[in-house]
Length: 214
Image 1 (cartoon, rainbow, N blue to C red):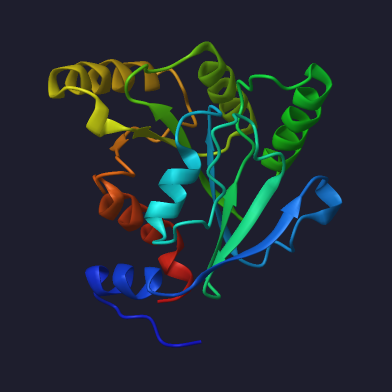
Image 2 (image 1 turned 135 degrees about the vertical axis):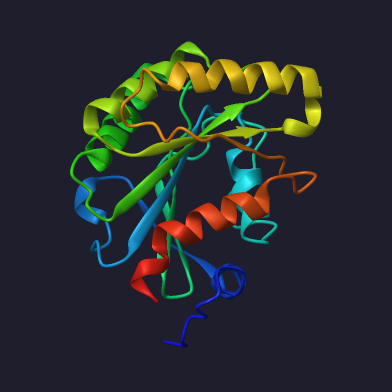
């Protein structure tokens, strides 16, 4: 294992310079990797731009699958950054054109994964900045609160909203998060297309995993 820099900015650059590779797709709990590494999960509505953000964040065009058909991520997809931590791409919720039985299976998989997964450091909950919280988002937040899993809201597609709209939205969300005990109070504002907020998100992830390697 190459030695990690002690300087914060250097550590972030060092960490994200490592290759990010697909490891496995998990359809049932028995297939989960051993919890030997920290895990950072990404969740969100099926058309929130999750795959695009993951690809942009790790500098890969096709790391996570981008599709015009909502709900194509049907498993917990594990990727590994170097030898240091797992990225978990969770199935999108609020699916369209998907059977209720399939939705039930995916939802149970998500809930089972969240319960007692000691290696899971944080769930980044992606919210479309144009629309704000939907009913399905609130249901997921409630489940995360119940499971006592730390989560943080990441607003996507910020380039498609006005500054006035974003300011009002972030104020309302910060107020709403006070009612959710597992929610991290700070929001992250991002645009996969413009690269906005990606450095801040990388820094946040690095802070969650850095103690293991410094």
